[in-house]
Length: 222
Ligand SMILES: CC(C)(COP(=O)(O)OP(=O)(O)OC[C@H]1O[C@@H](n2cnc3c(N)ncnc32)[C@H](O)[C@@H]1OP(=O)(O)O)[C@@H](O)C(=O)NCCC(=O)NCCS
Image (cartoon, rainbow, N blue to C red; front, top):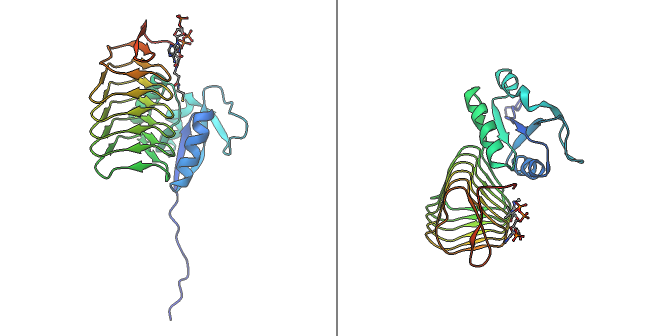
């Protein structure tokens, strides 16, 4: 019987931008999906204690790293605006945005996930939903059927979107919020933690409470 003289194992290496708590969770998801994380870049070369990979340098080195061969990049930054800015830099430099889905998430075969998005453990994305680029569906969040989450949206842990919800670009749906069927949320808006959103939300406002009312015209710290 012929013997195999060598076995070639294909490893996929990914560079992560971000080195905080969100990055730590994303690292585990990437590694659980078969990626080898080469290391992280951060804004000041620091990292959350216990990060299991090295910090290789500063975010400002991103383009050089990509031209040096680190073409696959995951942007592990929770702030929607910063994540989108860095994601655009990755694409402009010729890199690829890696999409990460936890093996403990449930994603419908008819759902579409955009480049650079992450679906965390316990999250559910149901039939016909579409996620744009660099979307976060965080731990135990649910996105029901036929919803549309535009680029740079973040659905925080435990938030529930009913069917047919449309979240505009850069929106944050806060921890544990509930959004009723068919609701339209204007881009860059914030839904406060624990809110119940019963009607459409304007662009760039913060809503909170049960039922949700505008608590600030204009976005604030996340
Ligand atoms: C709504 C939110 C953005 C406001 O944060 P902030 O800008 O720091 O504002 P403050 O805490 O100063 O609160 C401003 C007002 O909003 C109210 N408010 C704050 N959070 C609220 C909430 N979850 N529900 C209802 N009202 C809220 C405050 O009581 C305060 O009201 P007042 O002016 O009458 O006293 C923030 O509380 C929140 O819910 N963020 C979501 C965080 C999240 O889920 N992140 C994801 C991490 S993975």
